[in-house]
Amino acid sequence: MSGWPAGYDRRVYDTLDSTLAEAARLQHELTAPTWILALEQTAARGRRGRNWSTPRGNFAGTLIMPRREAPGVAALRSFVTSLALYRSFVAVTGREDAFALKWPNDVLLKGGKVAGILLESVGDHLAIGIGVNLAHAPSAGALEERALPAVTLREAGAQVAPEDFLDVLAQEYAGLEEQFTTYGFAPIRSAWLAHAARLGEVITARTMRDETVGVFEDVDATGNLILRTSGGPVPITAADVFF
Ligand SMILES: O=C(O)CCCC[C@@H]1SC[C@@H]2NC(=O)N[C@@H]21
Image (cartoon, rainbow, N blue to C red; front, side):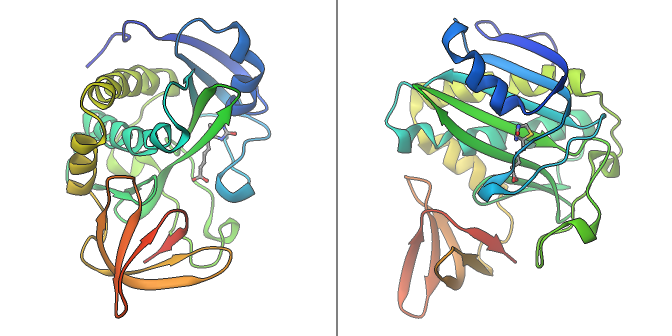
């Protein structure tokens, strides 16, 4: 797949503090959904207030678009995005078996984290921040306790420049975005579940307040993780998942 999807703009920067921060600064002047790519970020953010490191060679991008739906529906684009990443990774590596999706929105390569996604509301826009370890990954010492190891896409045999990866991702995303706006979450959910890591296995979901251990049974129609526990199914809206 090559080319650039119709209806999307793009801006490429050498260095930014954060593509999410740039999306917030640009929101009022954009006239179309826009991909913002930075070849280096100096103050990138990850989920739950964590830092995210983006040395040169890795992919750091944000897609900003007008938010037309209720926040909960718009947030389902985290699944659209992780599925687009999955398909992009398969496209550039030819390795269908090596990748899996971890709820809510990480992409795994051979069990290690290769990409992360952070959604933010920016006024009446949605900003989808995406970081991919194309060439570099943080060492085990830089990660939190129990976090999955970080791996690079090179470990799947692919050497891809960030600009080239953007072309692939933007096309994959555009196709899935159209599917999402036309048919809703159902087909995205099915496709996502087909590549889910640890479906049917016991996993742990940890929030600031508590921890739930149960069998990963499903992702429901609103994107909740469903864990089967001895007390019945428990829907989880937001949590960190540990295997
Ligand atoms: O914690 C995670 O897993 C999500 C990481 C998201 C990082 C990306 S890199 C591009 C965009 N800009 C940021 O500051 N963060 C996101």
